[in-house]
Length: 243
Image (tube, rainbow, N blue to C red; front, side, top):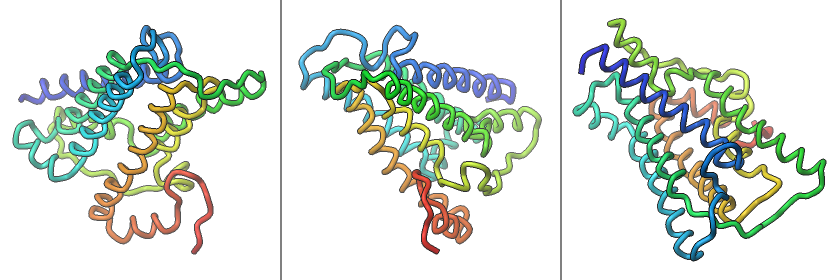
């Protein structure tokens, strides 16, 4: 794969990611998209639950396997190292697209906050969660995280250098502010349906499990530096840790 083709591939993968990310906001919030978490007519409960769990499971399995160093090493035998991250991003985004398309509505109401102030506060939290996600990606390196930096450096014939470990802004309060933002966005809603609840529970569970795998890899890369960081800063909920 040539340098220009690799760059175009990375740009396409990033574009697909961006579309899937923006669609996720509408999907979870039932906003402006043709298919959201609550749109459609309910079918058989067991069938809908099974389908939704499978869709969420496919995304979780892909993320867990493809994020591991051993898989990355294997993948770079098939594709150039410069597009490894873009490939991960592209497949994850396509699986999100599959989930949006095939998601089965389960619209029985779990809670409905009709109080105006309460509804506004939950809606504000929803948008705050997405804002935290978006800003947190730039507090590390947004373009490295989603593969563009890798293909750009490759296009310029420059060697890729791993980012230094930094703890800026929100990363001083929680180790995984991106995941904090997702959890807030997934749970903050004035109208919680069974389908939305299944989505929120499953994604939150996966986030908490996935962090364990990620931190194991981070310790291998950064050693005692990350261990000290983990001892000093909480995982997803800002709280003072004991010295």
